[in-house]
Length: 352
Ligand SMILES: Nc1nc2c(ncn2[C@@H]2O[C@H](COP(=O)(O)OP(=O)(O)OP(=O)(O)O)[C@@H](O)[C@H]2O)c(=O)[nH]1
Ligand SMILES: [Mg+2]
Image (spheres, rainbow, N blue to C red):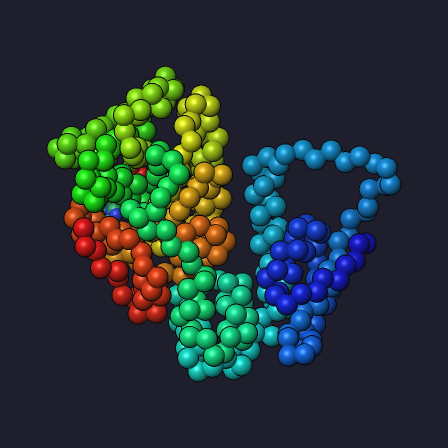
């Protein structure tokens, strides 16, 4: 059995190191908290019941298959639960200021996950004098879509079926046309299903004087970069991916490896539960993922997933969608919008 003691000032960092060094099979033997010169330190002893490879043995590390990755995730979820069971009793809410306590209770009610709350608890404890909102602001990044200097002109909108990809692509194209006078915008439909969405997108883009293309086969994907030469912005509406498909491998297959450098924006809605959301994000997220667009905020009854996904992916929020209509429903996030939504259920105001 391999036993190791991990120390640090943040339980979240320690958990991450345990996962990295010992893997998902590690078990927690003990957990202690010390105070040294006013600083709280944690000491967690973890063990792994796996025989060490004999000295000189070269281990070959094969890439994980999708099933194995899912297994690993499940194991890690179990380990995280065990860790939380050990650590949670230490998260004494009574040690926070009354204002911090109130915020804490609200976030718990919104479905913010325990490990995220623990991280916040630590931040609050370290900064009792700092205004609560400025501590919280560091938890969620924002990259207002229209004002962000994106590196590439190709933007792919990916998300679960019905999450609002097509309507967001159209509204975004219209908003860009309005704010960037003279910008040459192309809207691309990569959804091969011949449903209503395709007609809707074609109809409205053509009506608005925007360029429209369809990507039905790998030859069209191959010529996309050339076709888009005269354009400043290309918005690609992707289909939802069935079953266990993974976006990166799907894109590699359909484009025949000819995908231009691009940003992928995840179009998600808080209507999905936490486990489902984690599943979507693990399948859709890749090296090119640049932001999260949150849709259907008007229909949701809680918003904790916005914080959970910001925490687990590190991705900024780039847009909010607050209704099904074409007009006045797309909002660029500002600093406090996320917190107004979580603490007061106040929808951000659209002005497009
Ligand atoms: N209430 C509400 N409805 C929305 C919002 N955004 C989109 N919708 C509606 O959700 C439905 C699905 O939107 P689409 O844009 O077609 O979603 P999609 O992701 O392209 O769907 P598929 O292509 O079928 O996967 C439509 O009826 C939209 O009007 C929103 O912010 N709030
Ligand atoms: Mg669609």
